[in-house]
Image 1 (tube, rainbow, N blue to C red):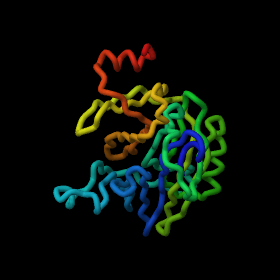
Image 2 (spheres, rainbow, N blue to C red; image 1 turned 180 degrees about the vertical axis):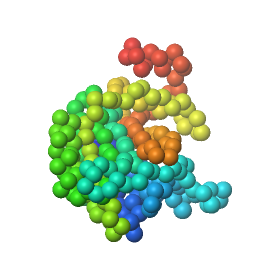
Image 3 (tube, helix red, strand yellow; image 1 turned 135 degrees about the horizontal axis):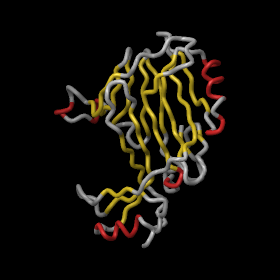
Length: 235
């Protein structure tokens, strides 16, 4: 699934799947390098894949590892969230390579807002979850995926609109990159934001991991004064 439209501003493609009651998430920019995994009964990880772990990482490939809360009992009309990803509409990209794959396209929030995707575990039926979701139509809350697992849990992926948007972000030139990587609602270079940049929180036990995916572009290295001028719209 992806936020936006195939011929308009959009995000990368995110994949959600399960195997033997374990749930996995990866996105197209990092799908062969790292992935989320949610293991029974409560272990959550963001880790490098086996193929891309260094020798030093082979024993423990996790960048983040934490324990989620137990899944609430059935008929409780509750769920436990494990992942939330935000996509600010103003920094979606138009310069990504087109994809011929069968993609579930998620409508982007209005300008100035964000589309939020949540991954949750529940023991309620799909009908119960849909009924609860229908109450939140003011934020265009919808179910994207509901799949029952053999252990009696189900994983559910939903999306909704938030008024929150991204802040300006600059990654200074380093590690051989020729310039600074910039995240701004304005794109004076008309680049189409060809780079998708994802940041993650550092969750503690009982929490969920928060991610933001940004569209970014390169500029020549900036001084701190130039960056302050650029991000305040004075350039």
